[in-house]
Length: 249
Image (cartoon, rainbow, N blue to C red; front, side):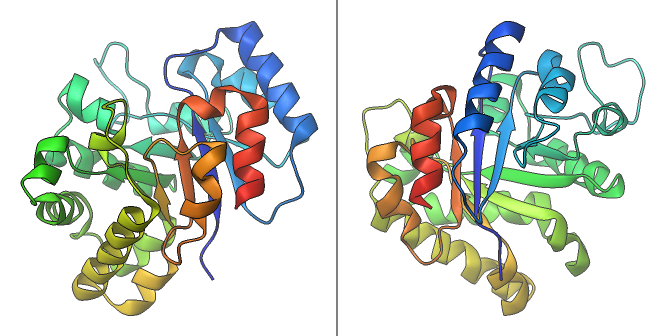
């Protein structure tokens, strides 16, 4: 049975003091749940976050990682650096990394391979832009992103992969994605994986929804059969909101 997951991507928010305070509050308010709960603070606070949550079931994950083991890559973080502080899951391919930092499918494929070689669990993000949705090209874009970065992997690698579908057009654009639209795409993703691999892999991989999940819509979205949780942005920065979303799953 595939895992239910609620992950909070903090992006470039919260200094050290704020990070420790929010994590302490989350740990204290965490509801009894069968879901995996994850948080991704900024790199500079990852080690502190691991220490703060050492007695909690909340997992600390990274927002990104580089494909090289070491070298002249100023400002980057390697898999071994993450592992050395107790972080063994990394978000790869977030829409902001693609849009603002030029991360291509080719780069992301290299990151995925490095992560898996190092036994780091991959939370792979993908999704279409507004123009793709309006031109009815969204299914083709998603299929291409999956194929280019993941479909050369061995079948066994999928046990270490979580997918996070981000409809970029529904994040900060004024457009709204419905729970039915989320389900439609998640079902398409499983169909695409079934065709590339088999139904067992498709039915066992967790697919998270990353399109502005909030306490008010989490229950409806998480109630869809192919939605296994959420990659949460802004709502993850408020303890009560994040807790409400966890309860919704």
